[in-house]
Length: 422
Image (cartoon, rainbow, N blue to C red; front, side):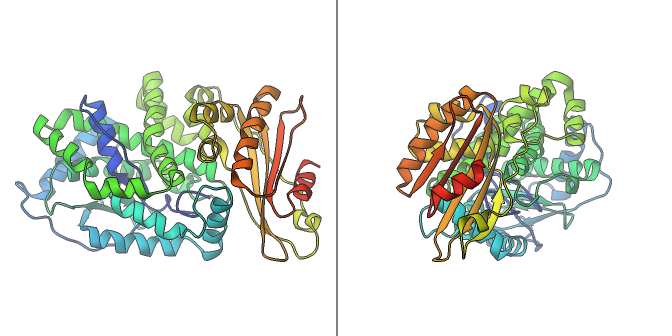
């Protein structure tokens, strides 16, 4: 259940408006906030008013990024400049190609039932509206293409920073084969977000170093002005918190994660992480747990859940949410942010299931595992508050000395909890 359905972040790795803001912050320039995602399909729009030939500018950026990252490209990928109209077309085409209707419906219904999206929402439209306002460029491993979005009609600081970021993705793909990562693993949202955070955090780190070394104070001012674009800010403001948080996470928390790796072992440590990548958002949020290789507890739900619910029930899908999405869920359903962070920090593993009843009603069940019995009790208290706020029939069970918390909401919640706890 990733931000944009099943595979939104996979086939194109995007630069968002937020990336410029992160770079500005690292350069000592004040900054606001923003978010991410991508997609692909060609069409060239030549920039106008470029002081120097674009090829010359891009070549200089490539040389600088190669030196920063310590990697060489295996093949050339010529950047394609597109405008906002073409960007929206590309986003729509890729989204529809990569998100099967059933997968998208599963994500949409789950998010609505959990209170993470408003009732009647279109996950497709919400995602595309956010992407169209935020994406500044993207690299598509599948198509071996790199796109830079020019909203100004020229090749300026925003476009240059974007290219530094996207060229880093090209280097990653050609040196580590991004297709081997689990970025589009079905029913594994937590792992996909964690590995995307490694990919994007690396690109933001390189781009930030390039920005600090190559842009003048005037150009940094232009970058800041572009990041304050009213349309982009409005797109962020209108997006549900779930989409904002899961979109921003790979860039902001990913940067912190990669910076910790660099501090411990330089880019050799980052390269090693691509060979043995993080497996949970917990490891991104708490880099020491990645260093200690604290892996998630594998949670397998009992077979035959639909049968246990009774005649006419059908299982729609399963997923693993992880620490990040559970924290966002708690925060979005009435739990104070500080309490939500504390309640999710002891996460060990989870598995969610969505079922549809004979009358069409939906029931969500979840089995969660925690590091200690105290962590489980803390989450159970917060989850009870969240479930009550949703107003649906619900049931939660947790034995005082247990590290397991099981809950369900919707029609037949009692039966599903018994089946999951059994």
